[in-house]
View 1 (cartoon, rainbow, N blue to C red):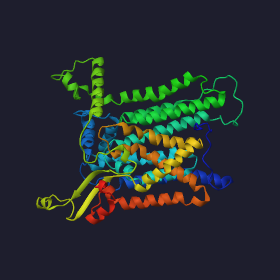
View 2: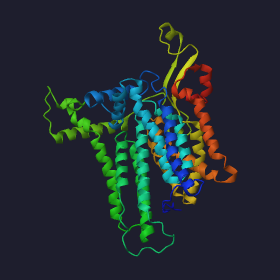
View 3: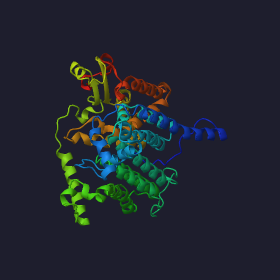
View 4: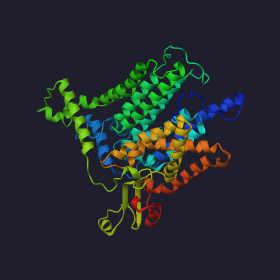
Length: 489
């Protein structure tokens, strides 16, 4: 049975209260909720951000590259990812200096804003601020989203741009459907073409997705999901107004392709402005320019850039390396193999060399793993969301579940080394799925306790695993208490 995406947009559900007092209450909550979420997320992500006060895990690549962007406008060596995320890391270094806080500051800010964007997506989808706030709160206390917001890596920026793009696509849908809320079953409006609607929101979505693509190529998964949503919404709108989804369809197809294909590609190309401006300093440019002379035409420079893109594709397509924390994508939803970003203990050899960071018998670790209360709860929620999407034609359930799956399932076919943190841009939609299911079940008398219980369990999980998400020194026995499975070590 097809999913019904034709329900016109409706305003967020009203909070209790009538008249002027009720209106003021709704306005106050509309402002305060995202501000509170922003404050909580920012506090958690920026507190002790500078610890450990040294480069760890993949910061060994991205922190120096951020500084190179400031010094030279381009990396010295081969870059396996596009520039936008590294420019953002560079912005933090420019603002706060080349130290641990500086190279992580942009990631912390991106992770904080992603929480707010998740709330805004929830409001647009569910029209219920409480459910949207629950989704954003779950993201706030999720371990993978949290740890990736406190390390100079690219995935948190990818998650930010994906959520911005999805929110803009939802705004575009609401703009498209505005004024199309006539009674169901009304006769179609003859053979007249559908009215024109402003398309600026989908163009802005294209820019956001272009920035995501210019951070990591895996943004293509989210772009594909957004494209499917846009097409289905457009066809349903045309059928609602004209009786046929194919009325004036070339205009719809052209607009969608321009917004979600052409615009992201242009943004991607523009992201290499520093590469083009500093061509003589690039890895391949140094081969073309000798003795300080760079007599290379613009078409030749573009050809060298295209060669670099092919080399990046070849690198990712042929990468095969052993890594102790690589994992099969089938294990990701179950959190079977997290990534240890940082680990310190003190043995006799380190003690003799005066290299101990911790006391003997103690451990420090930063473990990139999701909050089990959120991830395992989402596994229970997925079948319910799927049932509502298919059997009850619930387009909201189909949307959050679809954006969840379209960014996850393709990884099952990828044979190169994979890691749990590739799920970072998926986590907001995982949280939205769980919150939506909890909210719907919470409307029923026997399960009214469910949303609060899920939030409470998520807080308990956050407090319990917090020491191994921020690297707090603890006795080995306390650390082992948090390693529930041997594969977590």
